Length: 136
Image (cartoon, rainbow, N blue to C red; front, top):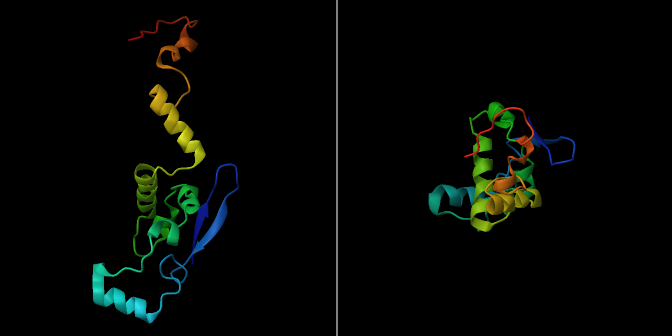
């Protein structure tokens, strides 16, 4: 039995047990589905999507990408890479992201940086320093 640690912003870590028996996609599969997968190969479909049907958006964004799951995986699956790819799909293809991240994207779009300052005001903090700052 392996443990996966999840954390949502502002919440303590919580533990999620990940075992081969209850791993997403393996739960509740009957012999007909397995037989269909074997006989039809990549053409097989259960008409479900990995994101939302098997893995919730909350689970994707709760992952801290600490890499503990990849280190514990007995078949060397790099889970953080897959999770980041699924997050990328949600953001780039569906425009779906938590509100905090959408705010950062908005400031990057408007100001060219994640800070809520215009490019002209970014160096104002350094105007009273006694060292020369070259602005370009």
